Image 1: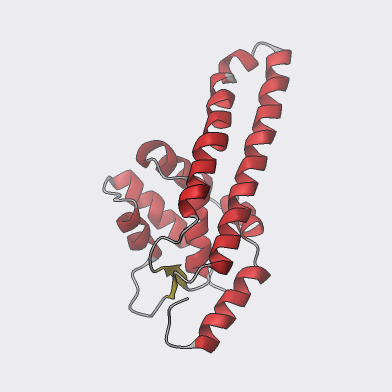
Image 2 (image 1 turned 90 degrees about the vertical axis):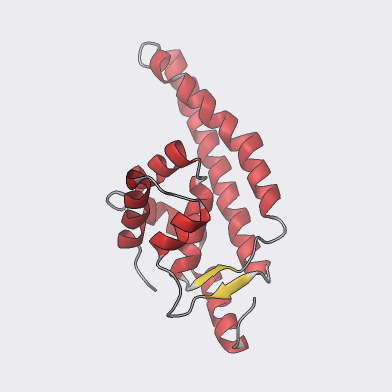
Length: 174
């Protein structure tokens, strides 16, 4: 971790383990407007929701990426090779599942597998954050979460910026 104070960095890093990313993601995703904001950014801007929630979690802990850590590409590959195909299958079966109990059961099981894959992703992201040296402590001059997300994913459309704003408004500081 790159910062001026080893004690501050150690305290912030300890806070990551005390606030599991999975627990944060479940609670945060359930807040008003967060699910819709995440899905809009996923579907319109190609943002990975797990990575988005990770950045929100880091920001909540007054941390940000100083640069992309080694290991992040492997996590993204997991998402592309495991989670995205499951999501695609689940979405593909939606219409048929409305008329076929058998298909509905298959879709439900695929949804469970998708959720398990997302949980694995979040656990990998948490381990990466706990181990990487590529985190920086946010200063008072740091950009807002909204601006940070907009910059990271080059968000420009009004709806995308409003989604990022919603995430910031729903994020409680520690």
